[in-house]
Image (cartoon, rainbow, N blue to C red; front, side):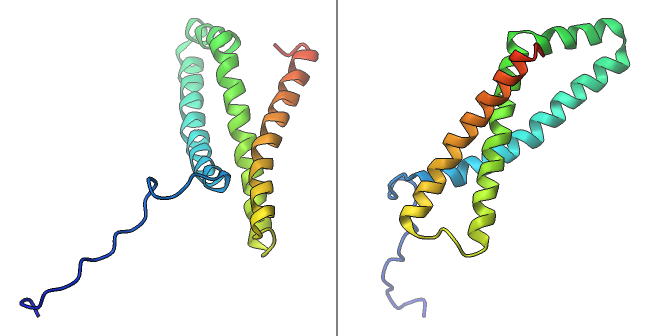
Length: 134
């Protein structure tokens, strides 16, 4: 069979061929947010644990960063990451029941994950601010 000429094999489609849609973005963001929560939470927990074990000076440095602008920005980002992953997970849970596969429904639910996650993040941080948690 080695001597017989063969037709070129078809190439698999890749991101330069497919048109970007909100469904694709939600699927990719679900993976990204899951990894961000896993790795980010571990790193923050380790920093907190090491700072607490090292002594009061190291812990005060941790608290200063956590309560400062960078810590608040990271907290805001983690809050959005959590809510985005949650909303996307609920969307996937609904789709696992066989619902929401229509193109219009799928597009609407994918768009809703971004909108709802931003609204929940803002609501959470407004609540924190109003209760003088910062």
